[in-house]
Length: 391
Image (cartoon, rainbow, N blue to C red; front, side, top):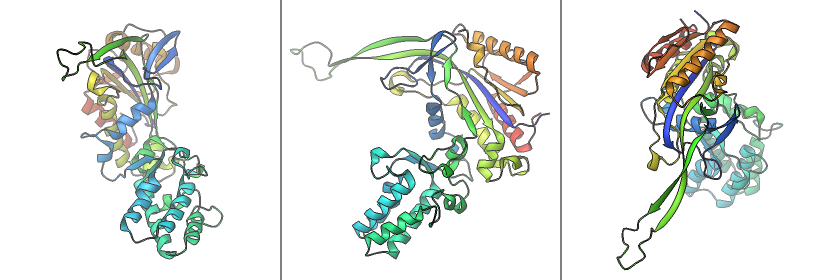
């Protein structure tokens, strides 16, 4: 038995002929590792797809949680626009309040859309802003300057309710929404509004050297006449890659419970952990079954994990990326053997103190790991969080 302060989730996913995550030039993202160039999937890409997935294990389907919005236009479209539609408030009043709110929420450059960074705000925070904006407009129906000053004062740390979003946190549970509780957020205009991520996600990368090609394609015009040029209406190309990718995710269980329940992380073992367990159960299903990918319509890059190893323990986590510092053949059995060998060496050097479970499509021999199907694996991890002990 061990205290599951951390859950470490290791995966292998296989994708043929895909373009999973593009860079600014439209090519697959890459990274050098072990003297070989690998294709990779950014952590932002992975988290985005897990956040927005819509299936039976969707994060937003978990009872007792609230959603969040990531946008540069929350003030304009979710706070002020409903007041404009009501057509009962003078335009100059609304403009003054909107300008002050944009600066208060997004910082000094918030007066223009290009100057704002997309910010994650929980629905409780959005509703709080809506209520405050409405109250200010009601209090100052004929004086735009007074309305603007009142809106500015709302975000004043010295005289108002505080530029540190303290009122947001006091107003509701999960003020930053479930996404903020899981993946954290950074507010450049106000460090006091930052939320430490409880789910740590590494960039996934291929266990082998990159495998890519340029796919040439042409488009035929259905209305082309016989007397017209017989050539294609359009000619283009795009990069395709094949990937057997190693993924690594860490769940900081005290941090997760703290973010979900509003308690101190040091008190996680005495807090209610039912919601944290449900979140972990859903997250494991999403990690295993939700695929990222650009060019969905032309590559259908949908894949389930070939392997998922979960470790529950109290020590600082450590990645198994070094299992692939020397590229291995692009086969699931070779990648699994390399991961198992790396685990065995780490156990010999540091002692095997984590409790392990494994889900694998193929036969495998992971050191000290009981084999389970995905449903049972997710249930086991969730129960370890709920009970505060892994068996």
